[in-house]
Length: 155
Figure 1 (cartoon, helix red, strand yellow):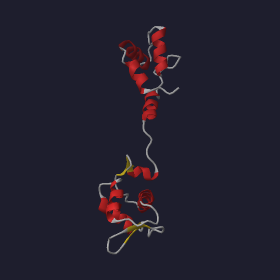
Figure 2 (cartoon, one colour; figure 1 turned 180 degrees about the vertical axis):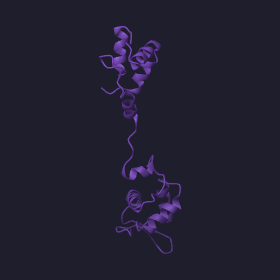
Figure 3 (cartoon, one colour; figure 1 turned 60 degrees about the horizontal axis):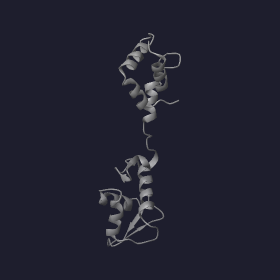
Figure 4 (cartoon, helix red, strand yellow; figure 1 turned 60 degrees about the vertical axis):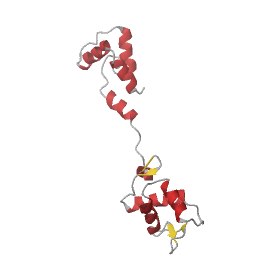
């Protein structure tokens, strides 16, 4: 059974149970009625033999930790790009993901439309637009009037 921090804290909120737990931690007899002893066991603070579970707090903290994002998700928070990665491989993966996510294939878009689409993931529109063009994920007309997602990036 995995103990929850709520159950542990609610049990320790009782002065009597907190004192009994402290005695058990010190290797003494908890000196509580069977009902209180059951609460200490149910919360995970004590084992059924009255000994203290030394790994309880580590387990409780670990069970409430949020999983760390993996892959390109490391660079996004709430769907928005926090920063372009410095690593070339990560940068390429993020730019490819954004190009596929934001821009339809084989369709020309004007700069205002490109800017609106980029604005859905970052406030730094010019930097991301330039990175997508420089990496070859977006192709820009020489006169700047239109953009198109490419099928073969440069990096």
